[in-house]
Image (cartoon, rainbow, N blue to C red):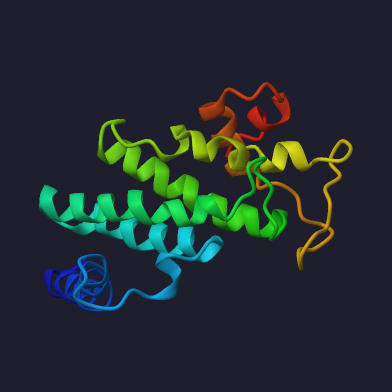
Length: 177
């Protein structure tokens, strides 16, 4: 991309995403609902915003503020699961929301050289196993909430979780992206 296009992208990211987010997490602006939502919007919004910040912001101090905010606010997402990891929104929403949680967690783990590992937190273990534990019969999953009866665990997400959580189910290891 040309220098002008890169500058325009950075300016718009700052104005439309990074500055408002920074103002919300530092108390200069009222937070929007997704920061404390107990459903997939929390992980999706944090994953996109913080992932972009980690990729684009130049100083370690700037990136650290976004990482710390993610570590704090992602607890709202995790609190939306029951103690046994049940996702009341169903498998399709779990794929979407927990997929963003996993993406955010991996971005933070890599950015902090393993010091911040969201997936390694005890509160994440049971929600991470929701798809595995929800299976009724081989390849059959309940249709709850407004999820499609055809909903299945996302193969790429399950491949990732299998590696991180040492799941023994070989079909997910065979689903290599």
